[in-house]
Length: 609
Image (spheres, one colour):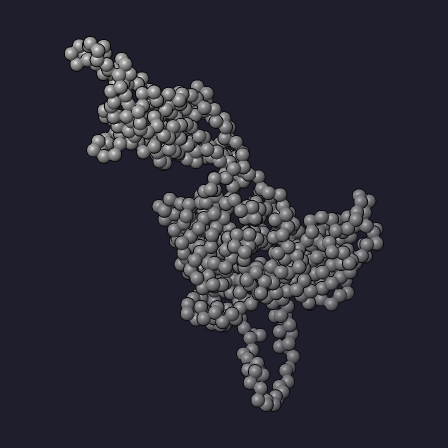
């Protein structure tokens, strides 16, 4: 592993890149009508043919299993740019007539004038390795004359002349030589291949580097499965069930890449959001619960990508593996501002004409995905595999999308309608109230009970919670301490209002309720009577008027009566010996408490005289 890490740090890595083809426009490249002849271009082998009208910037292309077919006006000059990645052009035939061209090259340009009849063009690509083997065998049949070489203080040339001749290597010998150069000779099997277990501890995107694809265990794909029992046991959040990796895939603009996707324990297919970080492995890392994503660039990357509802890469003729690669890189850039296409080969894949950058820009011009298409992100604490780009053990975020019934979010918020009474008085407690949401006006079908357990003296709430769009009915089913039960049935609509809660909940609405704190609108505070008769009629010339009393009010259920009162009033009696809760009886003191009707009242608490 140390040898491998040292080799990666040196930067001695590259991708085999063939210049040539670019990505297509999806619109017709030439003027046409129903009477024009049809041109068909098919590809055999692994290569790409770009088709365009001469001197035009519009183009389309033909790929294996995806021929080009279009009506083209007779007399139009058509340009064909043929490109093979590790492939050579073997032949080009027009209506089965092989053209006299310079074959055996990785690229070939062919100009063609459209006749007034339907025409078929076939381009055949041949594996470069096969041709090399044929050439080697031919050379071996001829005697080779040795020649002497005079060397004069040129170490670099000495090294090149003394390089080992590898032209006659067997496949297994070549693999072993490459494994030794990459520092993994102890990891290969007898066939010179890396077993699938190797990718449990190594970044599978090493396949994007030259030579690694030669050591690939499987000629098509690698799939690493997780422990299903572990996934089930740790099902508190979504887990990686398996990781799938493509082989070394030729890209339409030249060069090759390898990417993959992740199958999650909830059955969703997820893609990479951080191309410079290590890919997570099955069931090995703690994850967050899925987090709803509102970033429109990320939502578009998923919606218009591989397995998305409107896959634009498939529509443009990309192979399935190419679609996987494009989806990962476009998503990664949308989320993190970088991707494998930018990092590898100094950004060749990103900046190539018609390459990933132009596709990113095209995808971002697409319409916003429907609001009920939800995209989620899953994050990981760390990785057991270091990223070969950064060397860190932090894992990529993964993203997936799915259609869901459109929903909104409701919270119930309760306030005191008279904070002067309820403030700093524990006889009043909003946090004990409960409201029930019903789906019917008769309030028989309960949907959700809101328990107001968060808040303070003046405000309590519960939510937001998610509900399907529609009309609901909200009723208080348990009164808050010190408050009267609200008998009203409130009609509530959950609708697509576009409001977003600070925590990311969409179509959010707070249902606000104000309740009246209970109080006692006392009329008579005190009645002074004659000590002998116990009547409010004085004897002789005496008077019951203008006797003064001090009233002290203490808020709360168990106040300290030796401490400072909440409010104090000095009140005097009238001629009948009464003290009433009114300003005309007040000599001095604080303002009175008043109820919702403006009448003086006493809150819940203790009154001393």
